Length: 264
Image (cartoon, rainbow, N blue to C red; front, side, top):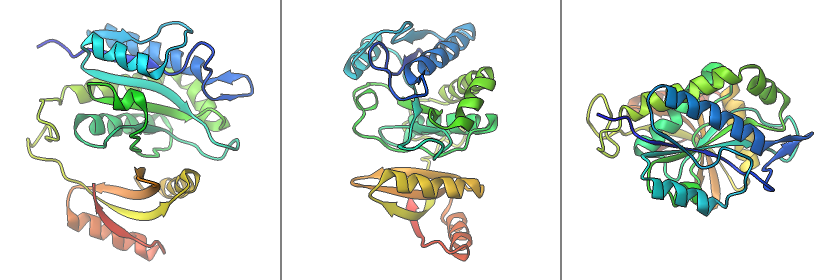
């Protein structure tokens, strides 16, 4: 069985710098990490197609077109996050169009591997308005590898760059081996994957949701910020059964949080 083809996309490029901070440009960080991961995948025997390998501008729709016309199997886009004020947030997110199936699993695996390197895991936000997630015909994720205007994230990005590239490569390779074209099937059980979480906040402003998610992450909870229409829900946990979710809910209630059980 041949390995699947991975589309590697370095976000922004050319005159589109993306986010920036004190002369540091997101487009450059994106390209360096995308190339590092792509080359590791190639060395491991995976066919890889880069949307760009140099500092050129591409419209998001062009990136999606390149991916679709290539016939690739997975799409991984590299970005870095930013916040209105420096050193406000810290951590990694991996965005998806819908948190389901192999793309949801890939996003969580990437976050988990990067958490092992030292990043805070800020969850798997759903973004239905991003072209590279919406218009790609294959499972697609967009990695926000730390905040470009947070000193701690930049230090981690630079000092452990090779470890970060290895972690993302490992997450991709471990995940795509599970894709048996069975939609949301659990690779080990073959049954439909169902997870439960505890919603502890619902905000109109993304920044407020992120603040609470970071607080919970600092306490050791697995936390996600999920886009739900005009609101951003902060959800703790991804439990395999309702009893585990209820136990988590009781723990959060004892800590003073208002809670709501949700089916993920």
